[in-house]
Image (tube, rainbow, N blue to C red; front, side, top):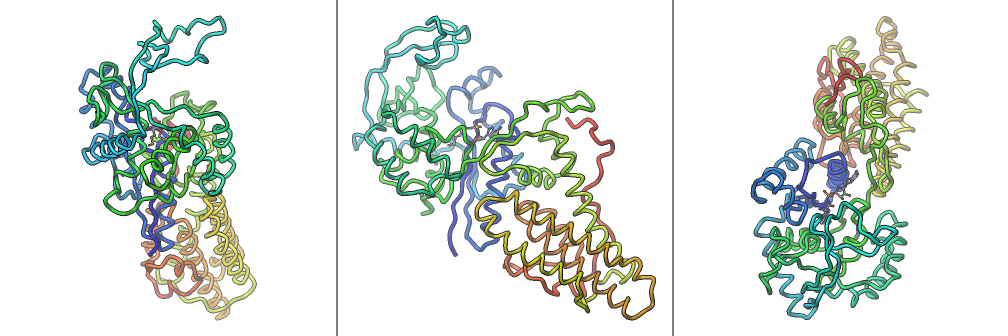
Length: 511
Ligand code: MSP
């Protein structure tokens, strides 16, 4: 069994989870489930990023200790991911001892090797924002924007990690590993960034300024810069499992350069560890025009759609709509279009027809197919073509296209049913018609079984439910499930299943 180690970014727990966080975990889950179906031994890590200025500030605002604050928020993130059916193997929190110990061990090693040194840091500092400013932050007249409050020039001793020393190594690594970043065009962005000489990375924050962090093992007056701490989660979580390097670190485009494409591989290389095999970089969900539901004028939270329409409808929409790597506009209207036309009217309709007609014309027991004429032949051929396309599409993260092909097959099956019109065949006593009736029932059910097998990594609960009402227990080898056959012969189906109910009032209050 090939092992496959995949991670998500770990979310800042300084606020509520939102669509962007949810999407990344769903996408990674879809990849993890797909690899499991392909027979890989998958290890899937997610977690939360709990140190740093932002978290400290949010805890202060609530007037509670940071640990209490992160315990509360991390639990909310985790319960959302459980609700979304994210099949993670481990959820790492950067405040856990196993992580802190791992980070301190690496820091000590780098310090002993001379990769970390102390130096004076001079710069303009905004106390209100608690951050160092850069020349580019100045207004055209040279003053600092209002939001920074009082700005003072300070000189501070800090610890620096020798990033520049490894710049050429990184450039070379990128040039010799064309698959290091998906989508490939993002390589260019990184190489562009590396055209300028790198500054060494300031990896410490004096405790007077920031307390909420991992103390440096070689100088307890400082805590670790949050990115240096957070990135290491991918390694500390599995250090004792022999799983490093990861096959994929899945991240959003905002955290590629410099943290994941520059700091991270260099931190690992300097520590004597290999970089991740690849970074998978997704785009953003944008919500500019449509934060408000048109019909009611009330704010719509995308996550509220989970409660109203179910987890799988939500997962389906995110994966169907987003071309991995690009951005997508989120609108409730578009969600409703896909929900109604693809899930309810297309797939839901096929489920209903299959169950109803099998119940009505065959006592709820699926017959065997008896004839293969043009309508059946066309459907078989479309199936073979669809199936052969799916695996390479999913391997290349083109899940949206794979779902589109799957849905086209469902559409073709519904058209097949129209053509065969079993409701007419059922009225005829002619043996030929009866044989065609049995054939059409078997064919639509088999098509349905195959279509939902294709969608299993995206809509696992729905696939399981449909298999159940078809009286079918799938085997362990997913690829074998994709062979058109007679697996449902004699299966006893349920009389009905409401899968994708109509909202009581379309566009009704969602929040
Ligand atoms: N804590 C850091 C990551 C550390 S990884 C060692 C962080 N956290 S975050 O909460 O701000 O973002 C977590 C992930 O969510 C990132 O990969 C980010 O790109 C993703 N998203 C946040 N908003 C997003 C959208 N609107 N759309 C899609 N994903 C985006 O960064």
